[in-house]
Length: 289
Ligand SMILES: [Zn+2]
Image 1 (cartoon, rainbow, N blue to C red):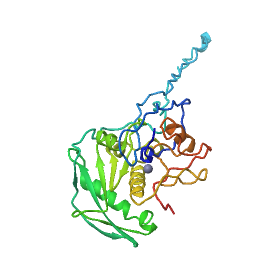
Image 2 (image 1 turned 90 degrees about the vertical axis):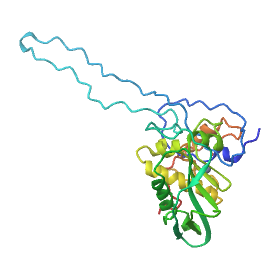
Image 3 (image 1 turned 30 degrees about the vertical axis):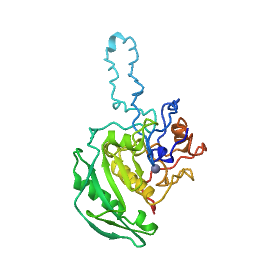
Image 4 (image 1 turned 180 degrees about the vertical axis):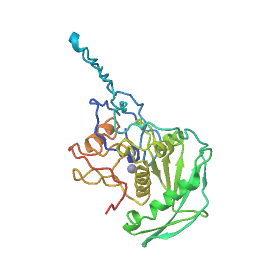
């Protein structure tokens, strides 16, 4: 069985698994010519341990002191979901599940940022996907023009809305992203195939476990990671325990090398990072400074 390198594309999430025993997904041969797939979306299993505070039996009150020993009121916060895997799709609101499989360009241009190899890009949204398109395009544009991004690696990036761009950054429905990026590893992921960068709407709406509470951070990450592929970058593992994760680490999966190894072990390609115990901190930027 051969698997395109893309199948294991981009995930990123580093989370300390609270539940042990993550079962490796079944190995299945890839079926599509996808350059990079990032699986996402494992059925969430709510394994949150219920810990009803069972009040201790009240000792028999001394008759004369009939003090009412208050039963302990359970004031613990609501149990939070415990994610079985860091690659699970976080809980959250609805997102576009299905689109038409075609995309349109969001109008708008932006002056070239950076200096060096000049590349143009469009921002696009899949037809049928309901989203604030200008907000999406603005986020992508801002991310790619940021000095912490790829423009500091010798690229000059310019947003266009006509002609043939060098690459396209597209918001793509969950179903279409699964078709394009692969779902052999049952995780919703984004991917890059040729000049098309498909960002899964499921991840755009929900983020990743490694970025819980920081959706903007995750979005920065996934734009930079997938565009990084379009610029010729490949995956790298966490190199220094505790350091910011490389943007080309599959943070949608995890920021732990061991976890990524486990999640990808079931693929025909096998574990793609060393099982060396290194865990990085989530980081969305190529050059975090
Ligand atoms: Zn990737």
